[in-house]
Length: 70
Image 1 (spheres, helix red, strand yellow):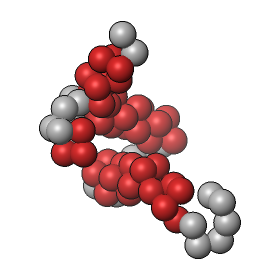
Image 2 (image 1 turned 90 degrees about the vertical axis):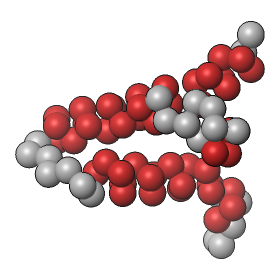
Image 3 (image 1 turned 135 degrees about the vertical axis):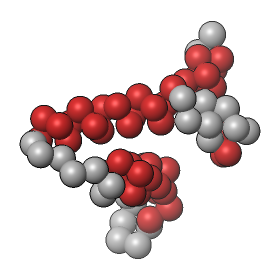
Image 4 (image 1 turned 180 degrees about the horizontal axis):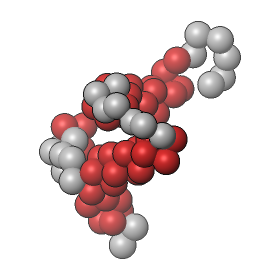
């Protein structure tokens, strides 16, 4: 962030962490830190490879990334 109150600098990552929190962490009852890490890993994989994103024209992030790096 550039300074106090400049929340738009981090809006994309803040939105991701909100989505992770509400769609994965808060709805599961993890019994250990290892389970939590595995759950977060699964969610990030789902988020990048399987979830359609409206901001990307209903495409998957890895699909857009791969096309951009060709």
